[in-house]
Image 1 (cartoon, rainbow, N blue to C red):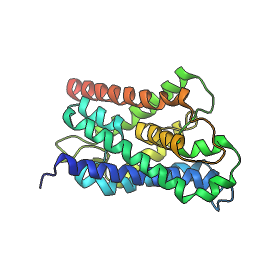
Image 2 (cartoon, rainbow, N blue to C red; image 1 turned 30 degrees about the vertical axis):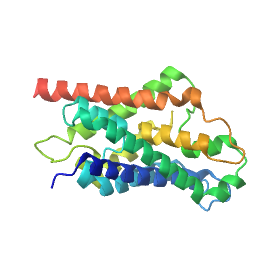
Image 3 (cartoon, rainbow, N blue to C red; image 1 turned 90 degrees about the vertical axis):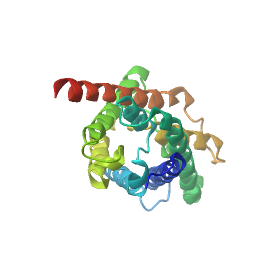
Image 4 (tube, one colour; image 1 turned 45 degrees about the vertical axis):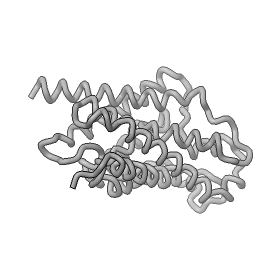
Length: 248
């Protein structure tokens, strides 16, 4: 049975919401004061983000393809594997899911946010900031990380092999390994947003929520984890078409 665009968007919303609930949740558990998971370390964070994506894929994969990421939707459309007409609905659903997931993390860890003094730590639960600020290097890092993400997804999402396209085409476990690998290898510079819905929507939530002792939401940096992934997704599509259409 072919689902309507609205139904697909509902699953994109749910999958992205769970992705952010678990992904931002592990950052909160790892960094906020008096959390039992405090100081769990980078490996814990990267593994949990991989499992968070896996859960989103299991929820949305059979019904929407589980893009869960505007850069994936744009890259798929640019590669001719997804209708451009569906992109706006998918992107809006992903952004809304990211916002709701971030709000749930705040409500869940409200007492720990109150117990944490450092405003940068609180912001870091919601969105990424660079380890060493430098807008062009930071943009390059987000570009490369997302290029790799989308190119691998495209490589495994040939129409001949899978009826749906997106992260759901990879299956839950391979995409988990992909996200973990990107985080462990390429996440140290910017925190590997590689997904505008993972970064922009929670950043907006941070700006709107009544978080005690919070700082500004880092708007001067906020365009980098949006533009970098979108450009990376487009470049991945161009490279995929060049390699698979021109070489094979």
